[in-house]
Amino acid sequence: MMNIKNESYKVVLLFNANNIYDRQILKGIGDFLKLNNIHWNIYISETLRYDKKASFHLDCDGIIANFDDPDIEDLLTKVDIPIIGVGSSYHDDFSYPKVPYVAADNYAIMESAFNHLCDKGIHQFAFYSIPPTRYCRWAGVREKIFEKILTQKGYQGVIYQGMTTSLDNWQESLDKLSKWLLSLPVNTGIIAVNDARAHHILQACDMVGLKIPEELCLIGIDNEEVINNLSMVSLSTVKQGTEEMGFNAASLLHKRLTKGKVSTSPLLIAPKKIIARRSTDYRSIQDPYVIQAMHYIRKYACKGIKVEQVISDMQISRSNLEIRFKESLGKTIHSVIHEEKFNRAKYLLIESSLSIQAISQQCGYPSVQYFYFLFKKFYAMTPKDFRSKFATINHL
Image 1: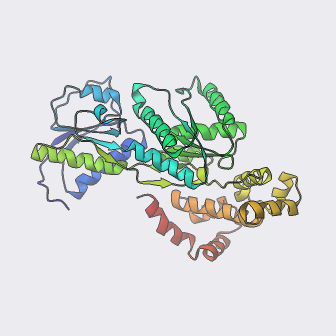
Image 2: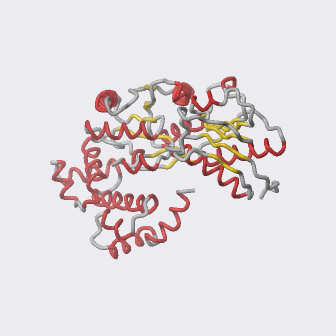
Image 3: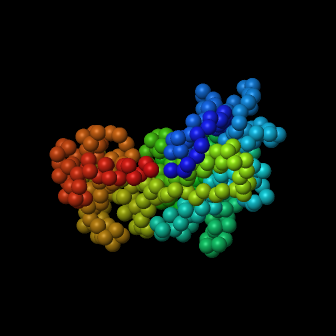
């Protein structure tokens, strides 16, 4: 623990904490204060959002602000108060704000997403971005990095910005997105500029019958739990180092307040990890029958389907499809069904607070006792022990 003098300062936090990015930065700030037993007199809007229409008086000793919001940056342009900026990294060193700045490393974020797709055997790439505005500068930076990585790795790729969506144009935007997705080669890996845009892709694919991950592979950025909970296909994502950003921003402000000077060189924070979920559970399968059967199994395995139902849906002989599964996956249809059920169970044990009995029912097991028996047989631990071991690790 750092030996820091405990002196109270009035500190303003300017964030729009309606998204996980800002909320986790705020958590990192809180972690720093608790770890070092520091008691700042903190102001943050009751709505956790900065409202540019509200009258605002910066009567404080220091500010930590999200500079990705241009309204906040404009507010602070001529403020003579110690400021620490946080936000997404810039494309070049000359563009950074002239304040101490803690940045999410966009290059490392995009490279992590790209490498994850490469590790899955993907060789064709696309990027789903956002139309350029001053409110999403970071999207343009990620577009340039996508192009740079493609050039460095010797791959071809396409960028689609789509529309800025609203309730009025939502269906039009989905229709145009669907048309773009249908134009992509099968087995394209798509990086979405954030999880919200990745959710658009999941909805568009569902609307036109494109199979994820069997035909298109998808990864987002942010690990936005609300978005993932709304999606039928669980979304792989890059978890940014946002808590570390908040921690370092608070440390810089405290140093500035107590010692008077800190470096204005940007501090780049790498992403924390890739959270791999179903949307990138890609296997390089060329056989159209196996692709179709895998999609059916993923969709209905937890409904208690048997091999016979897969065969019936495929309208192909059992022996023929079993041979195709062996050649493509090295597994039987029966083992793939059980694997899918277990994968769903493990996901719910780690990601949800559902009871184990509820998980067993959702995954199509006739009783919780049978679920325990099979789970322990395959993983040498009970579902309860699995949750205790891995759920904590996943949420760090």
